[in-house]
Image (cartoon, rainbow, N blue to C red; front, side):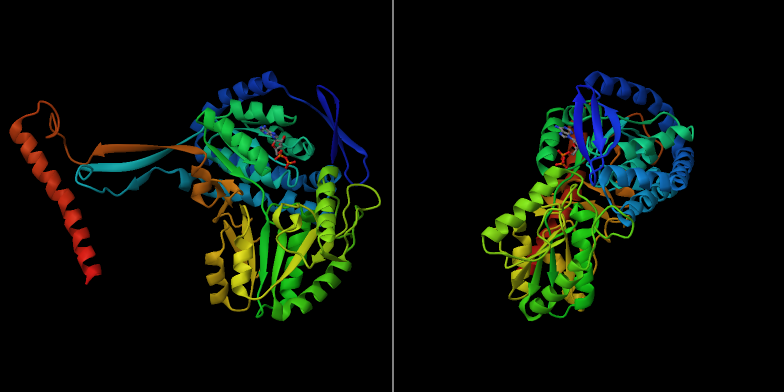
Length: 510
Ligand code: ADP
């Protein structure tokens, strides 16, 4: 979409493919955000007390509401984002998996956990961990996946017992708002709400929440992290990426071509984990480029049904893609497919660039557009070195028929996820953590129980295993003989560990 501020208190949402008005939303100021936060906090107490089973019941009803309304939601999503139908449909349907997974596992993941003792002083204790939800989670989301990136975190946060205040992107606030309507329509407790507006509204959400989950650009993520640091507030950040694809000489080339084409162009390239740069080993480079060019040239673009590649959400993003391509061409790169702005709307033609290198912005800056720059490399070593030559570290793909080799390469890549012979498959793998290394993020989302525990404070509980006496050996009053006994016992226990370590060192020296 293209938002236009009509006054201090309203934003227009327009269809990126034709500029038509889709809807208008308010700009919520700090007072409005705080009022919403107060209401949510009040309702959250009963929500937390209701327990995971009851909460899961509401989550499943909400999922059913979303699935029942998936046509309506997909239409609205297409209108505000310019996505083609298949790209939009994934959001309104597959994202419900996040709800199902956390509804099904909340009770198990939130159960008190017994942990083993370690060390002499905790030996007579029964140790456990209990989880208590943060009262209010602030969810700040971007415009590329208004439903998926909201549900990915709203589902575990609600399942954990938190209230959630969402701040969808000012570019695409409508579908997220409609999904939240669904929560109200099923009659669920008022622990989920949203506010609309731009950065100031987002900053107010950061200040109002007890935990902040932010998805967006690295620049804004850094500001959010600084604000949270000042307030000693936990924050989890999923930021930009510049994901490399490594195509080795023993790859199934047909699959690598199709995977890279889809991984680079799905959602018009506006995916944090899209293929943003490709390194192909010299032996198969010519053939790879020829096949990729053919595939990309065969794709159609537009808003009507049957097209492959949609519009870009913002005109600013089209400018970035265009700048990366023209800077590369000016520095000696060649466009072998696309490389042009669309005639109207926020379109950029699906593009393949060759003869690129790391002096060019298309290989170092996040493009977030339908462009695939391909670079020829001598071998696996050079591919790994160049793949790691980035400030980002979100994810990567490796294409080879040799599984052991693929795993070896994966282990050397400085990224939070590696998909072997595939793209995006980590995204809906809810039992795996989704995290960015380097400038791509901080903390993680999903990852089985961790994805739910992150929305809780953990409490350590100790209790005596055996009947207790009036006082322990180490308590008052101190006496010389008790101190001596305690010292002997503690030294014996601690020293045993020390002598074991010394023993190991001796072994090594031999
Ligand atoms: P983009 O993805 O367009 O680069 P951003 O990363 O700036 O956008 O925005 C992602 C989300 O963060 C949006 O919902 C936006 O309104 C919000 N946002 C922008 N600035 C701030 C801020 N200072 N504090 C909190 N949220 C912000």
